[in-house]
Length: 133
Image (cartoon, rainbow, N blue to C red; front, side, top):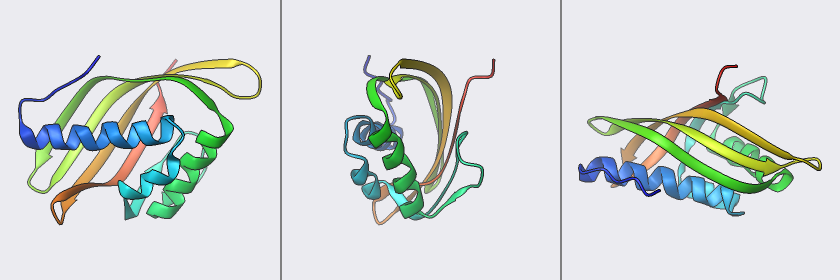
């Protein structure tokens, strides 16, 4: 299901999120360097410490993408709030992947913070987690 926003700025932010998700779920995790700000920080459910820096974030997404065979990825119910040259994006996700011999289905939520620099949107923070039990 395609999701569109009437506000052109929100649509540009959403296209950025869709493109970066497509990159790592379709076997192109190195392309995340085109979306992750060099000073990005991320909090993930699988890393004890925060990921600090765009290169560390790309490396973490790449490890997952190379370890898992992703069968399905879907964003649901996104909301985007704009604050001048900054944006917050929250959505639910569903993913199915094979890791270690069996399919794993997970539903969760993602929260991105982006800034617009030099005419384009960059992810500066991400926190995601599975839905609580």
